[in-house]
Amino acid sequence: GKEGLTHLVNDVLWARGETVCTVWPHAEMVRVLGKDILLRFNKRRLQEKIHIKALWPHAIHKESLWDDDTNIVRKHMPKGTVFHMGYTIYGDKVSFIASHREVFGFIVQSKDFAELMRTQFDIIWSVSKK
Image 1 (cartoon, rainbow, N blue to C red):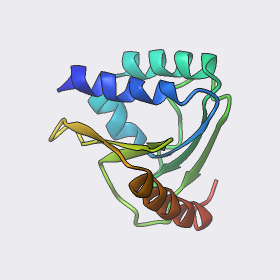
Image 2 (image 1 turned 60 degrees about the horizontal axis):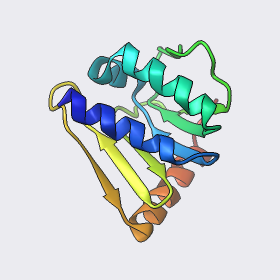
Image 3 (image 1 turned 135 degrees about the vertical axis):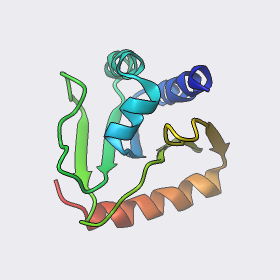
Image 4 (image 1 turned 180 degrees about the vertical axis):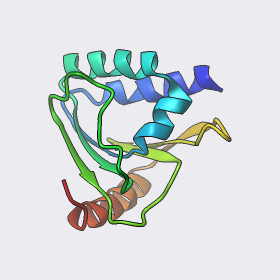
């Protein structure tokens, strides 16, 4: 549920000083998590000096919820890319958050899995546009 997803999102804050990579369907994640959770997360993210590389689905919506986008680089995936679930890669972990229809999340802690997901992220990043 939503409480568990809050803990899942906050787990990323242990990545102090790192760059995390996320595939983030922004509008859906705001709907699932709520603005308050994401605003608190961003405040702590800035304190912990965590950088974000974010891939958003191709969409007209390009506005961020956060007033302070320090240390964030966003790209939009190619046209036709649609998804409602997001994931974040940090350290040896990958966390997943489902859409509002399913409301679940989980973390996989595996160096090999995180490496695989990071490689896939980098390939998509290379063909996406700011």
